[in-house]
Length: 141
Length: 292
Image (cartoon, rainbow over all chains, first blue to last red; front, side):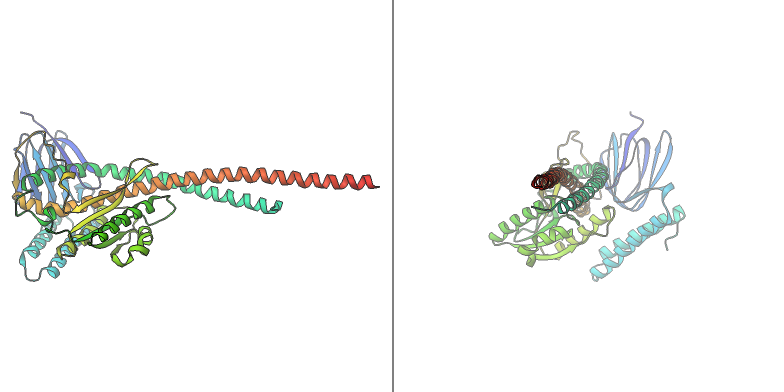
């Protein structure tokens, strides 16, 4: 059994990282999961959260705001719409992410007054974002 | 016959034009490099995205419950054309090529009795097709304030298109842009984005693995298709950016060369006239001296 797996984190604007990882913790939409080498093939969507990559040279963390992950035995790819390394994220970045989530919530509230589904989804997105803020020590306001 | 002074002024003016075109060429070259880099960096995402879409579309594709973004609305009466051009001119045939293609397509659709709606991105293309198709304009996206194209720009365009689709404003959407091949060649391209063109996705499946989906395929597909629209628009914007700079670079290169040729020609003319004036004066002096 291979002891590492090729991990790629890409956003539409660039390839953020491409490393050999021993395990990757992914904030999947139906709960966090940790993928290790030889994981069975899986495609899942993401919720806003923190991707934690453990490789030979240590652990690195990335904030993602959604997207999806493709996992198979030999590689793990995360396609995130927005992704920032935890060390480099600034209050400004985070505030703009929060503002985006807020805008989506108010849009959903305007557009779907009689359907709770999309509104709840947007509200959940926002609360996920706020939870990330608590985790990394940035204010959501 | 222009006087010596006229010629001199003319040469000076062409020289300063040459300086300007030369400077524009160099600026375009620098911008082109940046635009190409941006396009290069978006490629890994687009490739993987299309790969996953291919897997999903082939497994859900034909079922009756497939999302409208994939299967279409069942009619193709109303077409929306998204014409992407640049915000600035002086880039050779770049804008007019895209505009021409959009015009041909729109006229073909109109001749078939379809309804055409047009969204323009970039004001140059808007100006170019306004005369023929101005009545069909429904929206314009202004990117002139945008310094560096980001995914957010593509997302907002996509969001607008998708909300119109949800509102039932059109059945088929196509984007018009220029694909960057190299500095001298840019290929005006039509790409259908709604309903998604499955053949554009990379469906070759080497490992033949069966994927689990979480949540189920249909939910993921419904989540991915809107992103697919944004991704297609984003890569089109980037291709267009690179094409624009490439087209401008070669146009300005031509202009610089033409200005150089013109300067040479004018300089020869100037020297000849100068010589003619001197000869004339000499003849006058000599014949004056002889008459004495």
